[in-house]
Length: 116
Image 1 (cartoon, rainbow, N blue to C red):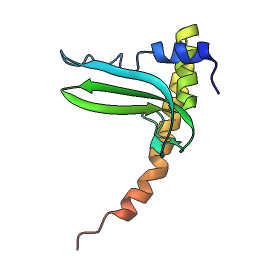
Image 2 (image 1 turned 180 degrees about the vertical axis):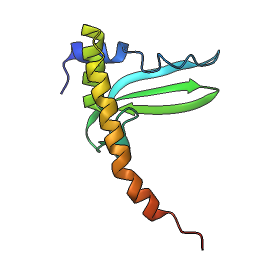
Image 3 (image 1 turned 90 degrees about the vertical axis):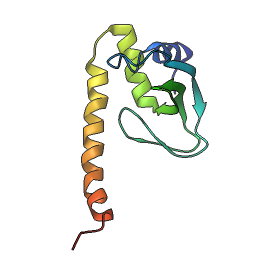
């Protein structure tokens, strides 16, 4: 569970700092909510389970309406980065993402039909 101060810091973190976007891109909502169903964290690919609190952003990017979510672990990393300007925590979440991608790769290969 994050404190209100940590939530505010996480919400102030620019999740898309490396993506310059297009004119007309805009954030419509950016807040903490409870998941009504399972979601996948945009940053680390961990599962955000139904009932868990997470950061949800609804925005228009590249002319498309989209919703994205971040797990509490990634929000904590973002909050720590905002406070300390040390990217170590963000980098750790990216390592978790790499691990999650590797775990899913064999399952994705099994799910694909083989061409014969």
